[in-house]
Image 1 (cartoon, rainbow, N blue to C red):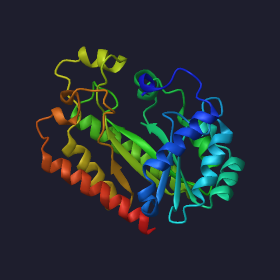
Image 2 (image 1 turned 90 degrees about the vertical axis):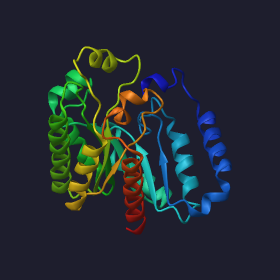
Image 3 (image 1 turned 135 degrees about the horizontal axis):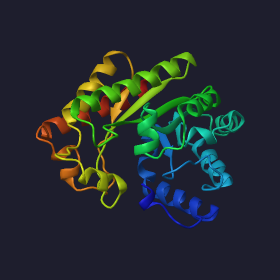
Image 4 (image 1 turned 180 degrees about the horizontal axis):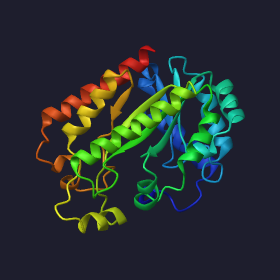
Length: 265
């Protein structure tokens, strides 16, 4: 994702112009929108990369959409402040959902493979600031390209179980976005995968099975299907022997069921 991000500061005026453009493009469908996500491939609560005044104005505009029930903010938890969340809640009048990357509970993979500069202790400490907000977290299926299929399943399930316990202890509603990993061209992951004999991306059938297991435990789970245009198909779940359009349709239906359930809550 950093390869797609701007290397220059985007001004408040430009951010608001983008927002107005999007609203104009979808104006005929505004009456049916029930959830709005604000994201910038980073942290919208990080004032060094996203103008705070622009965010406030966009949030204020969502209050005019009475059908919108939930406001989703993508951010790293280190930028979350309880007082800022309260301000956003008062300005918008909406339920808040914090969308954040967790990826894996494995400290070695977080640091060595993913280069994630957030120890689990810091993540747990930051959870305190999410009081009165929901949490949606990305969990990666096969974050380490050296994993085999069984190891990928076990690691993803352990990560989900860790999150579920941490959020349950703090009474934080949790949703999991389970993402089968892909190899983006020209990245360190691609170079590492090229050195692994018989490397294979995750099987979509495995990802579906894990999602169904956790849903049976009453945990909301939906699946990420995109490689953001950064990968060839053979380096994604589409390149595995189990992939069929029937499986893909199954995921689309599952994700639709997830959305419908959240709309009814």
